[in-house]
Length: 295
Ligand SMILES: *[C@@H]1O[C@H](CO)[C@@H](O)[C@H](O)[C@H]1NC(C)=O
Image (cartoon, rainbow, N blue to C red; front, side, top):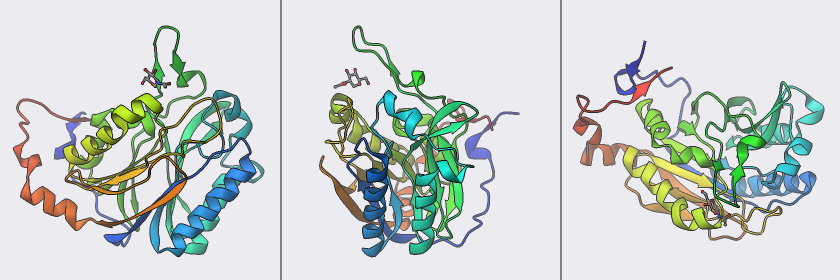
């Protein structure tokens, strides 16, 4: 039976959590060599952990360039040790530094299909959640079409995960352009929504910051977006500008287009405060419109 998301009871929080901590966005340079990318990511994660960050985020597609010809070659099969180097590196860094990692996204092969997938690891190194991009980026411009669905199979479930650093909703890149997904995460009690992404130069300039702020203010939650840096390899030129935005739309930290680690303070009390100052959920007109949770 369908129900409105807001009317569903919120499940209890099952892991002890901290609500004030440092978050780090690793805006790394992606090359055509997977080993180089793995080393670069490991170094950046360790550097961010050494600076005190408890939640580390990688960008969309960081093991290979965001270009069709690399996906099959770099794809990992998560249940096979010999073909899951990125997966095991993330797990090891998470457990050795006792931190939570939202591992950007990598191509993942399952039953001969390839998905654009984000893996979340807890401080014990265990996989906590896996999100495959729901909305593939296809557009139809005369002479300049782009179809991510030629390369990837879309995921089919929203992902919200309880971690030691809050209840986190996950989306990947184009998923940010569907406000209903973020609304669903908010209705299910998300403290923070994270989108590893790689916008191009024109939508990057026009929409990247706007979409990030819109998802944050509509839902009164923290929102983080993490991109590879501009000079990454491949035919697709990436905007960069990884950023973290608070529940009233204020920028907490932001990169330009170069390689960089953005570190910012998160305090979930700000979500609560913003929701008290401006109780939008109580102002909803459920008799006029409703969010459906079909799960
Ligand atoms: C970026 O993507 C948009 C579609 O969202 C497209 O219209 C535009 O031409 C692309 N820009 C570049 C520089 O590839």
